[in-house]
Image (tube, rainbow, N blue to C red; front, side):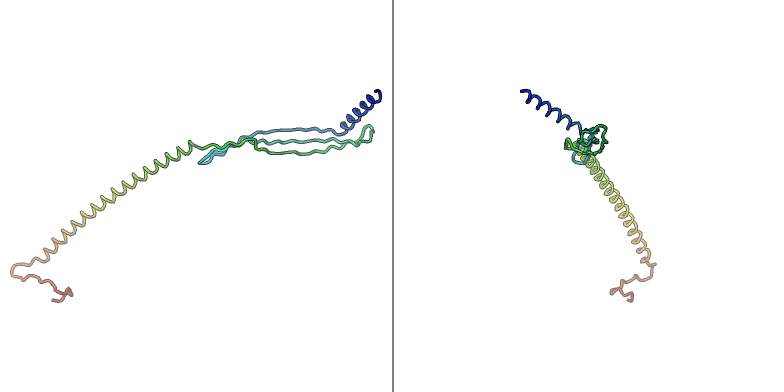
Length: 164
């Protein structure tokens, strides 16, 4: 019984001594960010964790000497993880876009109507000017064709070559 207890004590002390030979110092800094991306159709929200960790490993040779030289090794264990992701439909933006499109369409229709009315007025003004010019032309023709008394009337040219 004594030997079993002494063997257990030796095994326990030897494992403690072996564990004491390597010491780790971990410094961890965690930053959590929420990234929100707004698109025309949907809103994507991602939760991202940036973990900046630096591990200092102090190692000592296993030769049971006192005041040994230690070796310090620094390890970087930086990592980035996406913890959560949420997609939602962008209803408010869709409503605003639909309303703007509706207003734009109404303005376009009003503009078309105004252009049509303006073109109609211009056409009527041009028709009136044309009628007036035709009336003046007919009046002038009548004046030119009118002959004093005793003169014979002008004859029309039958073939249109200017020679009777």
